[in-house]
Amino acid sequence: MSHQTKSQKAKAETRALPEAEPEFQIAPMIDILLVLLVFFMTIATDQVLQVSKDVTLPVAKDAKEPDSKEIGSELIVNVIWNEIASQGAIRLGETDIEIAQLHATIDAKKKIDPNLRVIIRGDKSVKYEYIKSVMQTIGKAGVPNVIFSAVDKEMQK
Image (cartoon, rainbow, N blue to C red):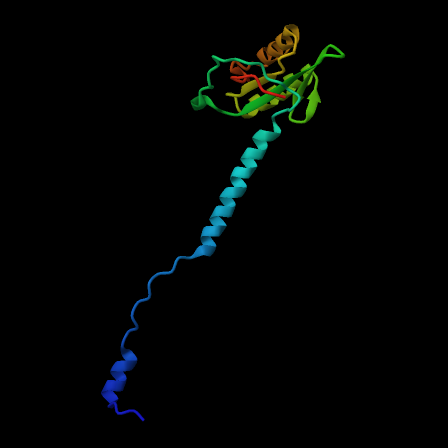
């Protein structure tokens, strides 16, 4: 039994409940973090796949980092030298190509981005004449922005 009057009961029913503190929603935060994680993994994987383990880069202690302001799209060209056969090979990603195919690939990429930059990752044992022919092909394709990859210290094997 309750000893409240009708007016007291009405007041109790209409009284607003105190506002609860806002709760931190973890589910949307996890969703956003997973999307960012996938995004960065995709970008990192793309860059890692373009590097060939068959290339031992030359040492250039006074080399400079490329200007990151001018970055458009990039094409990484791995130039490998086979000592036994005494011949070179050009590798884009995991695919070995000929010089004529390099020219066609550069032309296709330049149509998409006229500010294409080519990065040559030449093995330190590659003969100058072969690198020269690769550079001439890149020049004939109309790419003025060419960078050579190097390391700042000798890598231990």
